Image 1 (cartoon, rainbow, N blue to C red):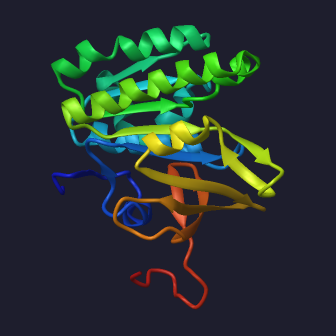
Image 2 (cartoon, one colour; image 1 turned 180 degrees about the vertical axis):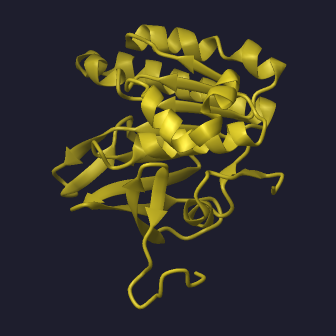
Length: 232
């Protein structure tokens, strides 16, 4: 295992990310509903748990124990002993839980996951600047944890349709975009999905791979003109 990266559980996603989830930064995945965001979060969590690491998982989407069991397989119960699950009921409680992660990180944790950072934030949009400042404060805390404890932080983000661009973009504005050093966009393409690199510290944007969601995670599909199993 590369000391700077934590494997995601998908070799193709690791390649897209330049090696896996980078320690010390925030990696963001965003996309419309059912695009695979939660699957990526669970997949990375199980990968960390299998490596013997503790995972702090803050979930506002409704954590699926069944999905965790599917991805984790026969050792799901044993792996779950190192999964610390937080389920906030509102945006204020989410902030309290983010602030409360520090003692657990001090004791040793290998991955922080927030799925999703903006699910409960949606209900605060009418509060305008105040809500944005609170969201930015939460993400700044997460970035501080990533740097202080040298752990990767993975957040998922919901989207809205930007009429000016004619496409889905992540919630949270430029602050969330700026604080996330690596960003991946997930798209639904009929029964398939596509993961596209939007931002990276050392790779140009635009690289992508197509995949389908399976019972135990995801399965990458060969690119056009590429045979199944062919090395990328």
